[in-house]
Image (tube, rainbow, N blue to C red; front, side, top):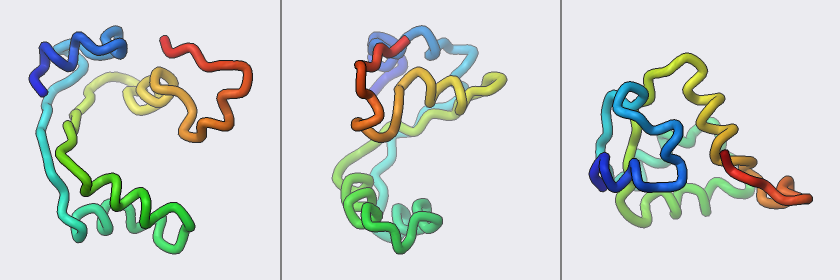
Length: 91
């Protein structure tokens, strides 16, 4: 995915050239994904998480902005769909 394709997504308000300093298209191996998600080992969802992570390419973003991760999480909404009771409207 190119920056212009990425910028056309509904997430556009956060994604400006000043806030993303690097993109990298990656395809993780099982070993890479297991190492990245090691803190989740033993949780009931970890196998599905790893299988999803290795199922195809992903676009890694290097964000540079004050509170970038917190702002990103607020923008994309809750991790758990059931917490969206009453609806979730992305920014």
